[in-house]
Amino acid sequence: MSEQKLAATTRTEFGKGAARKARVAGKIPAVIYGHGADVLHILLPAKATTLAVRTPNALLEIDVDGEAHLALAKDIQRDPIKQIIEHIDLLTVRKGEKVEVEVNVHVEGELAPGANVFNQEANTVLVSADATNLPETITVSIEGRKAGEHIHAGDLELPAGVELLLDPETMVINISESTAPVEDDAAEAAPAAEEA
Image (cartoon, rainbow, N blue to C red; front, side, top):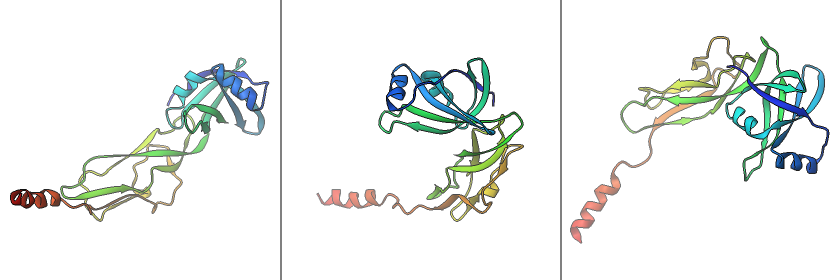
């Protein structure tokens, strides 16, 4: 994963009023912290930042007044109604450093024929990986699986250099028989139509 570059400015005004004014001007208030350094208060360009953090665990290279900072978005606060980003907490990382992140689980494939359904018990898994090579998703195949089968965290195929931090027995996918009636409505409707 290559880092996405953003230009930021140092934030000098604080409080709700200042944050609101910044957002009206197309900026997102943010903080950069980590590695024992002082917390850095910055303003990021709203449009470019919103696009950059659409990718989970996006690695950002932030230029603050000519000084580059490599960081991960650890907490993104959004307006609950408009869904615009109101504030971002960024964690400083270094190349070659291992970090802990939640990675989305993506399910693909078709179950074995029959009335089988799958329940995704875990949408994300906690892993440790190189800060500059974080997986966007972890794909799990349910191809040909039957009712009664399970896929646990330990069954996931992780990319090279990625370590699972969950209990390997954690249930990720549970495959069961569907409880929905099959074509019962159509069978009942036919005699009713004949009587009419």
